[in-house]
Each structure stands twice: as structure tokens, then as C-alpha cells.
Image (cartoon, rainbow, N blue to C red; front, side):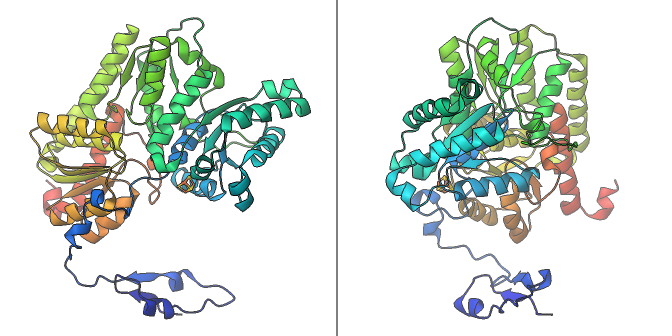
Length: 502
Ligand code: SF4
């Protein structure tokens, strides 16, 4: 058996030259393993001039991914909707891979499959051919047209292309086929923002295209943001306990965490997802709740402006205070009383917090994630008596800074806030500080290992552990789950065995 390759922390030409040739019959996992060895046991801080991301043109270890991904996530939460990506195959392949590794579910995403000729002559032909194939072979009810960097740079006129496509396809396939398909265009040039903005834009475009005002209903609209299927189920549980009818826009609870039942008719669509008629009816609701200001706030603002529908934008109902606000606003909007079961769930969380306060109190924590999640986690940590020392978001957001400062002021904390920074900068602060715990996504796993600071996984993306997508972090029960994760991680890493018995 070949010995695993040893690297001394940095890949060199010698390392590359020493790579064994791959035999024709392939290699084993043992042979693939590359052992990383630190250059020295202590942390050697990099040149301080390159630390602040604001001074660099290069992003090192980004904490965000590209804008179309957020719009694709949104579209996957709509029943019988297929995203059609006006760009190259790579812009579609890696989101499909990301969905599979986070949610372990197959996701259908179509692509215009740009090549060199498309970049020169434009994507009109690929677009019309692609829509035609999609409609004939997959019979979708909605096609979410999503642009990418290349189609935006070459200036593809998507609205014009769509008109032409509809005319051509109506002639070829007949109006009865075309009338059964709705089209929503979302412009997502990735150089103008991250996945957070992609989701936000999709919330606005879906509502602009589909929501109508007809007869008022007694429902509430919920735009959840990029939270887990488990979170969405928790929101539905709260609505059910309060006897409130709600429409969840981009309901991924049964598309990205779908029961496997056979037989599956082809073309296959999961049974879940927000129905197009329900999105249409969102123009008639009592109120809109955008749980994440940066991921969906634009949709709530659109409904507010267009239909004078009151909007509650954030905070994400995670922990005691923010969940209290959400429940109270729901009760006020609908006139429904707060159910006793909800009061009990709150009581159970408070009890769990009181039981474990001596473990969490004073723990210094570094937080990293999307702005809404990072801000919500900061508040929950403060509620647990912890000290958020460094709070970073991969996507820049004014609301994130405002929310974290408000929490810090309320709890008399002084965190370092890194707004729209990369993980390289956040990591440097973390390694120079004395941090007890990290709250972050899977991208923080390497930093956690290197700095020997335990990691509690939260937010997007979590791809290196199973089951997180099924769990809820929001609501009182979600808070209970997150509290258990935090406390058990502290017990695993910070407490001597004999103290854990006490
Ligand atoms: S950054 Fe632009 S080109 Fe790259 S995958 Fe995302 S959309 Fe495509």
C-alpha cells in the first residue's frame, strides 16, 4: 500500500512532483488520503496588512456563494417549479451538487448550457430551445428563469426573449399547453451580491409576477428565508397551535426533505412546495412576515407597497426574545390567542436555560454565517449568558450590523463585528482571541480543528454532518435543540469528566 502523501501545510512544486502516478486500476481511499502537517505547532499570524478583507481585492475562504443559488433555492420551494438557468452548465452543476450534499435530495435544475458561441451571439436560441424541451418533457407548472454572470454581462434581454419564446411555443404547442405554464424571471448577476440577495430577489419577483389582490382571506404570509426544512415544519407547528392559516413562500419542507414513496411517476416532482394558486392568494393576506430581513424582506416590502399589506420584517424567531416577538405579532395580526401549548414550550426552554446556565455563562463565542442567522445566534448566545466576541457575516448587510449592535448594547457586550468579510479575516481574529466555542456552518470546521475550538453547527451550509436539515432551530423547541447542542459540545470539550457527573 502506498504511504499517504505528507504535506507541511503548504503545497509546493516538490509535493506535486512527488504525487504518485495513478495506476490504471485506480487508487484506494488510503492512498488518496493526504496528511496535512502544520509548519510549526504555534499559530503564526499572517502579515497583518492582508488581514482586513476591505483592503484586499481577493477573497480568501469566502463565507458566501453565488447569487443564482439563492434564487434556485427559492424556486425549489415551489410546487412543480423548475429553475431554468440562463448560463453555462457549471452555474447549475455546483448548485445541484450543493443541494445534494446538504439535503441528500435530487434537485432538477435546467440550464441553457452556454458555450463560446452563446457568449458571442447571445443566449436567445438556447433559451427558446431549452424552454421548449423543458415544457415538452417535464410539464412544469412554473419555470423560474434565473440569469447568471455571463447572461447579464452579454446583456441577454430575458423579458424580450420570453415574449418571443411564448409566441413561438404557443404556435407550436398550442395555447392550452402554454397557458398551463407560468414564467418568473429573476436577475441574479453574481458579481452584484451573494446567495442571500438571490433569495431576496426571488421573493420579490415571484410575488410581483404571481400575487394578485382579489378577495381578502384571513391568512398570514410567511417568507422564511434560507432556513432548514425542519425550521419550516416548526413554523407550521406554531401556526397550527395558534389555529392560524398561513402561506409559506418557498416551502422546502417537503421538497428538500421529501418522503421516499414508491412508485414515483415520471416526470417526478416532490409532493411539497408552495402551490402557484397559494402564491397568487398571497396578495389577499392579513400580513406578511419575512423572518430573515436580508432573505425575503424584499418580498414583504413589495406586498406592503403594492397592496398596503402590513409587513413584519425580522428578526428570525430563534431564542426567547425573537420568538416572543414573532408569536405576539402573529396573535396581534390575527386576533388569535397564544395557545397554552406554546406557553408550555416557552416554559420548557426557559427551564432548560436555567438548568444549564452554569455551563454557558461567560463562554466566549465566535459566530459566523449569513447575516440573519449570525445576528439571531448572537442574541441567543447573549440570552444564555455567553459572550459573543467575534461575529462575522459573509454577506454585507446594514441590518446585520444594526441587529448585532442592538443586542450587544442591550447585554453590555462588545463584539468585533465583521460585516461582509471572508473567513480568513474572521479566523485571524478567532486565533488571536481566547474563544471557547464557535457557532457556524460547515465551512468553519477546518478553523475549529486548527484552532482546537469546538464547533456547533448552525446555518447554511451544513454538509459534513447528517440530519441537521431535518432539525429546527427556530421557535422555542428549536431553541431547546440548539441549547442542547451548545451545552453538550461544552460538556464534551470544556469540562473534566468528574465535573460532568455533577
Ligand atoms: S459566480 Fe457567476 S459564473 Fe460563477 S457559478 Fe456563479 S453565476 Fe456562474
